[in-house]
Length: 190
Image 1 (tube, one colour):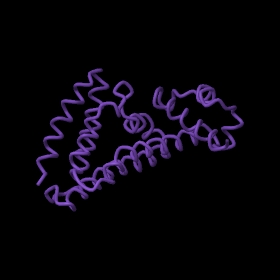
Image 2 (cartoon, one colour):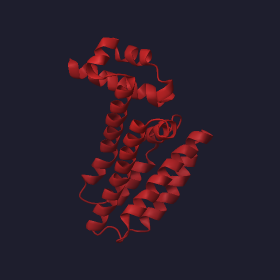
Image 3 (spheres, helix red, strand yellow):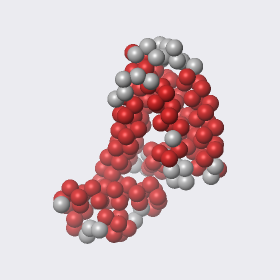
Image 4 (cartoon, helix red, strand yellow):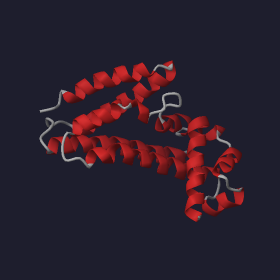
């Protein structure tokens, strides 16, 4: 029961922050959607900020695991699987944008705890991509290259594509950027 209460709080907080930003997130709405009282929240978290930091970290790492660990668990075809993954528009919310970018843009210059967490998350995002590229090189599916720089380029392009689709309200903007990015990634294929 305790785990369910904590999970409900984390899921509700993440949804509310993703929808309205941290500053616009309502603790009342979070508690209502989690179906818990304020006292239950304080059993797990000192305050709204502590709940927000944990929910952002856990939910984003959960998304990373779903997206990237499945590719890394393969025995071959890493680039193709990765490209298939980033082309899958059902994995992203183009109305709300990227939760990483949203929190970075809203909170990184206002609060050092958010800044530190979002740097950690962003570097993990890039490392996940680098790990996939390194695995492709190791399995001789891809030419040797500076995978740190390539992962930075890919992460930056993905974030820009999501932002473009959010700004214009046109998912095709994302699709078009990812098509070009995919061609570039496949140019490293052996």
